[in-house]
Length: 137
Image (cartoon, rainbow, N blue to C red):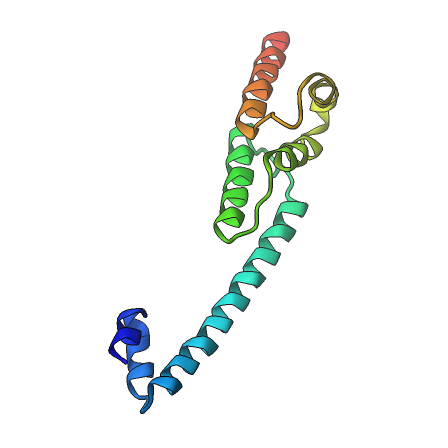
């Protein structure tokens, strides 16, 4: 029982300490673990749905959106669900505002989508934004 108690968080000690047999305590840990796994699976499903439905918010900057999609991908990875870089880049390109349509076509035609990172994409988009701003001036 001592070994089991040392391997669990303090919050669970009260629950397990009340068990008379180690087998009962172990079964309780297993039941609690199944619940944690289910919560994790639900979180992954919710985050995947959020990734699929992600869009630019009104007035959102490229950097803010880039941070939002990068954090979402990192959280999913932490939970055991990997979204590879090409998928994140393609998603980013799909949701860009319509003023970037020509840029998206150019990037898809002339960049290797398998190796392009979100950070590299952001750099390219910043260059385009700067060019747009210079044209307006």
